[in-house]
Image (cartoon, rainbow, N blue to C red; front, side, top):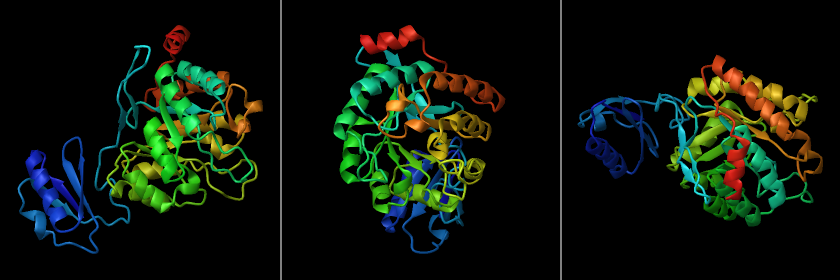
Length: 363
């Protein structure tokens, strides 16, 4: 059920409705919008009597939500969700402006598949910062198909990522794979990534839903759109409403790419949900030559941003080097995205001057 408050409803009236919901043994999810506040109800075993709330002060309308996913639905929140990352002051004293995922500005998340060493991570981060991207990706924990493959540097890798934030002003997006790793990711990062293999790890989704950090949720390799949105619902049902979705390819019969990039899911998500959705063409295609055209197509299709892998020496990468852009290719892709963004009425951050990045990194 959804309770839509009147445009002039006061904070006290919203709080009174939430208190009544909780007194009934259910959970209230207050979601302010541009012109009104909507309050979603979860935990009720069946339909509730609308009369319980119709006469309360400030209530405009009581609506039954018909979709299996409720909090992610446009019925609950018609305004697009914008995840905001506060301005940063680096150790060098430089001021890094606010960053967002969702809204008018396209988000670009770039970096290596995994953090291999401090030198490797810093070399890539310098080029990512220079390109204009505001988010840095890098795995400290790497769930791999083979138990003998490189599994990441764990906390040592997270410390390197935190240092990159302070040196280059990049927000850190990195994966948590269980409760122990999640506690450390919360300590060092800015956004928790839930990988494709964990999209339906419901215990992890609930734990992530109790986190203070925003969540970057990747689509499972065989997940339907409903599966995908219900995974986000698990997170939001625990009270964390800052969720961004990511299409990263699904398994099909195709043999010309690592996975099949389902760009049709982008407008489908926007038709059903207020959550932002990004596209990861690196994992979707698995091949460097396919990343740039698919990234361009993603922006044209309406994606709220992209996540791409980048490595300064991909031939030496310990994981997924074949699907990582070289730094110059990242620069060219950013230029392409800026041109496409004007057509779809979006914006992309300008590249940062070489001297600016160097000054931040060395002070």
